Amino acid sequence: MRTAFRPLLLRTSDSRLTSRLTKEMVKVIKADATSARGERNVLDGELELLQGFEFNANGRLGATIYAPFDASIDRATGEAVVNVPGFVPQNTIAAPQGATHLKFVSAAVEIDFEADDFTLVASESGEIEIGPQAEAAVNLSNGLPANSTKALMLVFGVEFYQEVNGSFYPLKNGSYNALALVAIDGAPAVQQT
Image 1 (cartoon, rainbow, N blue to C red):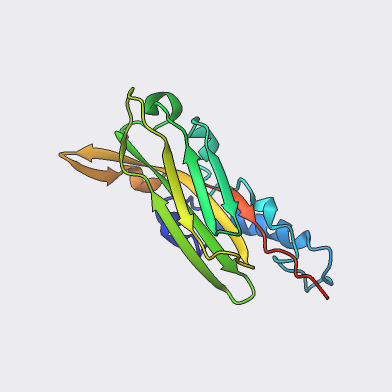
Image 2 (cartoon, rainbow, N blue to C red):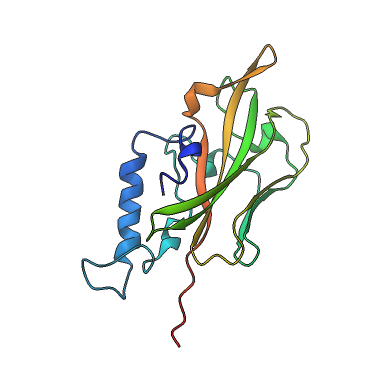
């Protein structure tokens, strides 16, 4: 899972991510009530236990974005979407000192845990000034394969930048950036006939 989200984690994670994620994955595997001990796995566990997992303990999504947002995965169409209605950045974003702009980021992944394979699709907004202006709604859409039989996950976050002479520079190497799992659709159960 870390490999699947690696492009985003390079800009948004803390030094203890691996141990925190491993701890949560063990809970998922232990939730497997059908496999014998020692043979329990992620697919038969409760992948949804990861819902809300924060990839950066230093920049939590819930303590950074106070604007409401909606996240959903449509397995039939493969669309994984995050919608942020219109907002005022300085009132709804807890930006760190020195940040002049932000960017919303989203990524959806289709993971085949058995084959150790994945498909990642990412999207991001443009740079948004952190100020008193009213911003239009932001829609981040990520198209995965339709009718997938694999696990689907959607992350959403915010990255902070500082504008200097018309160029945007990441703030503090991403240490304040937030990213969390906001929607999960585990692989559907296979019907026995």
